[in-house]
Image (cartoon, rainbow, N blue to C red; front, side):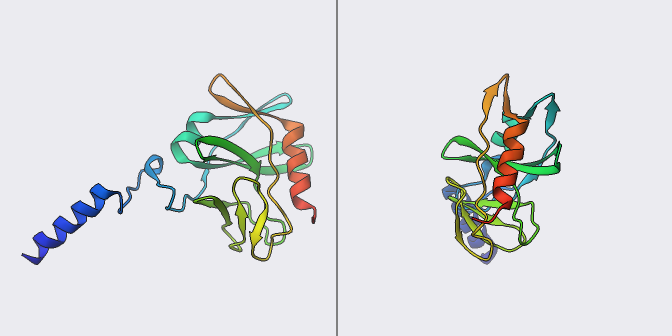
Length: 160
C-alpha cells in the first residue's frame, strides 16, 4: 500500500513538471544545465556551430583554434534567443559554465554572471565579465567572425 501511494505521488509530481527528465532538451529553467562540448567548424575567417545543437542541449561549449591559440566559446538559449560569449574565467582557469535560470555559474569557482549581459554578480572572478560574440544565423548555423571570437576572448581575460 505504501509503495502504491509513493508511486501515485511520483506520477503526480512528474505530471506537474516537478521532476525533470534526463533529456537535455527538456531541461526546465529552474534546472541547472551543464555545458555540452561540441565541435565548431572554422573555415577561413568564420567559425560556425549548428543552431540545432544549442536548441537540443540549451548550453553548448566549443573550442576554436585561433592565431592566439585555442580559445573556448559558449552558446546558450536565454528567453528563446541564442547568446554567444567567450567561455573563460581567467583567475580560476575554468572554461566551463552552467546555465541556471538567468545566470551563468563558473564550474570551477562558482562565480555567478548575468546570462543576459555577461556581467559578474558575485564571487571571486566578477571582474572578468563574459564578453558577447556577435553572430548571424545562416543555413542552420550560428556564424561568427574569427576576429570577433578573439576580441571577445581578449576582452574577457583583461581585468575590468
